[in-house]
Length: 361
Image 1: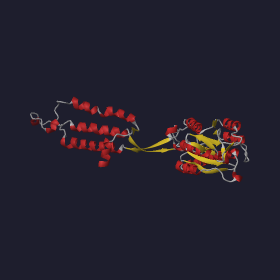
Image 2: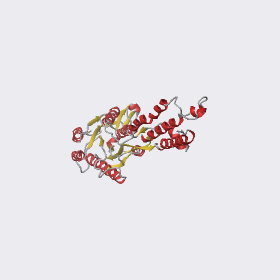
Image 3: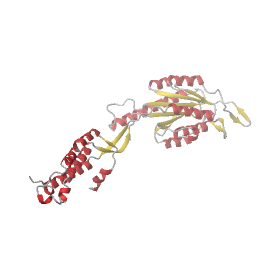
Image 4: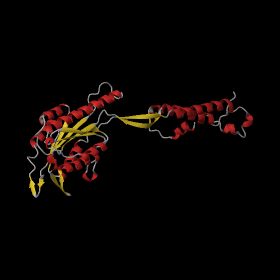
């Protein structure tokens, strides 16, 4: 009993039917009758008139109990509720596929405040902040997004599927290294793009199937991912692979996947003894720009670590206006407590009116 009685004094999160409170006006009408009969004879026994007696002084009690009972019943009818849990639907979320060049030229160095650092290590540091957040660099992180990673050189490999557990992704990123075998070296940009698009499509199909299996969607789910983004970073030009980058870009555009392309380089060099040798032909800006524009994305060029951080920071801001996650709130009904309380008061009022405060004709 104490459980439901204590619920009477808890403030609910909401009233499911607040319009029912209008009935409180009707519930309070008996109070008018109490004041209208004030001073009238309640009992016919004349010997009670001089002193009055306790029953005459408390004659208002049955009417007051009736008013309190009606108020409690009206409050129960308004259906007070407490929010007991929130669940988020996967019907709308964002998926980000990172595609990172790990060809041999990514071992060339870039100038940083701490001294020369390999391009790949600079990229790993910036991408780590993009995923997990870096307040010093103004990166807020992507805790709610599906993120996966593909690394490529002469061949493209899925090193981490799209996941919400970003610690797994960060651990994989920490182990990422440039290729060591000459036979695996090269820059297969088209193949990497195509694999990234395929992984995004696969993730979308898996999410749709999961929603249908759990009964969270009406009918077949076609596009559970509201936004699909691919971020491609490379320091070279297409020289390996079987898929043309522009063909892969068209493939992405047809599936609503936006591609951001980043060319990294500028001050790279390879140290051989005391000699600093040039690092090759550099980034194919025209091709990377065309890939981005074909999919509605943007091309960025980063020639040092600070510029690369600003690039990822800008992409981070560009992809902040997409989320529209559906939220379903479960509520616990609290009407039982006022309903029981009102019923108890009504019973007490009827007993008092029929026994203690019984009126004689």
